[in-house]
Amino acid sequence: MVLVSIVKALLPIGSALLMLIGQANPFVQGQMTLTQLDQPSSLFGSQLYVPGGPDQIDTYRLRLGGPVDSTRAGLYVTNFDSRAAGSSPVCTAPDPSAGFDITITEGGDQLYQGTLSALAQAHSSPQSLLPLASGHLARGSVTTVSVALHLDQAAGNDYMGCSVSASLAWYAAQ
Image 1 (spheres, rainbow, N blue to C red):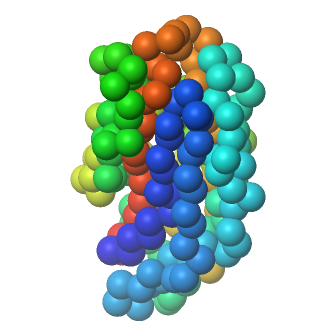
Image 2 (cartoon, rainbow, N blue to C red):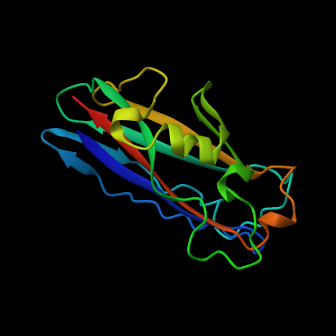
């Protein structure tokens, strides 16, 4: 099993700042390594999220190293808090993460489209991971995954001052 934590996100809505922290160091398990090849452009960082605003997109290139293919590979959400500690008292949305639409693609294949809340509920562990398009990675292969995020047009004043926290973790197992 190889685990790479790629995204640590904090999404204050209103001040609308999403902190993105990537790790370029490889994670090693046995003889298999999963390495993020470059730092994403951090389009999520310091972006203003307004209802119906444009997608903020980050792209991740991952390489599987070692002498064997993975039998399973994908991502899941960890460290999720739909109403993070940084939320102000004016935040009254029942589930602030439900206001964020997220689309995840690998190459030309759409892996997921829905809300951040639904992604976190459906894919919260390696056992329930969102699989890559092929379901696995071949040794030496490089895959590119894009994550697009925006605040839904229907998000109203109840989302002001809300903060959402989440991390995306990449996972591969032999």
